[in-house]
Image (tube, rainbow, N blue to C red; front, side, top):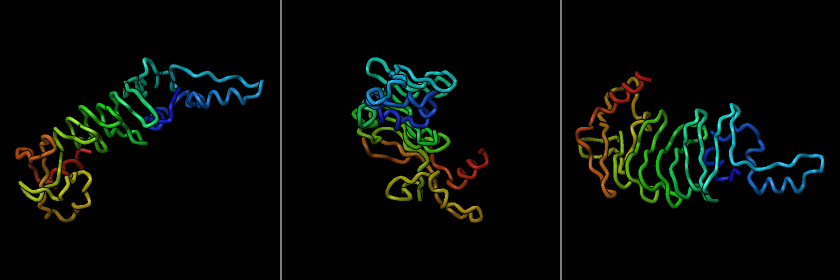
Length: 207
């Protein structure tokens, strides 16, 4: 039942399956059944896969795969092929189980509404995506030299730039703010501007 793209996309959740045999795709199962000695039981594919607690973590119906986390919350409902998600909705995680994207897919890419995250579910981008890129929405917590200028030519996220802020040196004059994106063009949201070092200090205090 499981295809390689489904498993590789949701490896963190599907590795919790109840049996290793659940992780075999149709072709491997057929090959095993052909080669297995007569005294070995045949393996049959399933339309549902359970975790060790007996909860459904994967099911397939109407050409859609549905993936669930350990608490039974649906994290994906999408069509897959050899390249991965063709179309649908999904929460995408890294190998450690950290959420990195939650939203729509089409044509194997982020298309539609979605949110991109860093660690600790810190939002970086939110809005409308087209062919894998955010085209309308907000880019959060970007470093700025001043009220009108980005720190670098491309947006640099505060929480990926902590090395710029020394615990013993608070003379950093950088600001942090959000960018409003419309049709690929952005402008700095003036009401979002804050002192970058203070924002980072507050973040560490709340951890």
